Amino acid sequence: MANTTSAKKATRKIARRTAVNKARRSRVRTFVRQVEEAIASGDQAAAAAALKAAQPELMRAATKGVLHANTASRKVSRLAQRVKSLSA
Image (tube, rainbow, N blue to C red; front, side, top):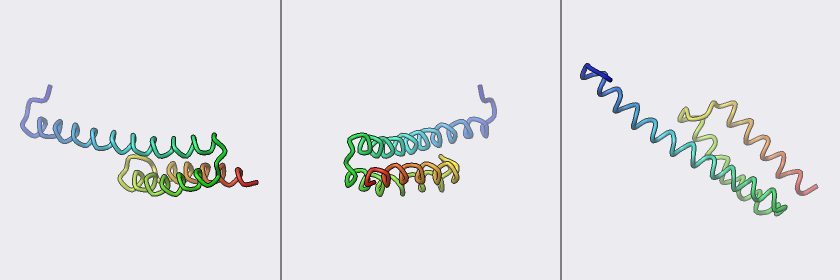
């Protein structure tokens, strides 16, 4: 348990930050899941629309430090590749 005032404040800050990061991570996962579901249904138009919505969310998570930038880029790239393969 934190003893000093500054340690107690740090604990509160960490709790707030954790809640924000958790919400962001959940939001990203929701958007990615929507793309996955659209790909699974085989609807190329819906998948493209879902990807267009998911891409900024992934990049925002990267800029906020929830995801590493390369991880976000890799996820966008792989999803885009799968959406593109639906049209072929």
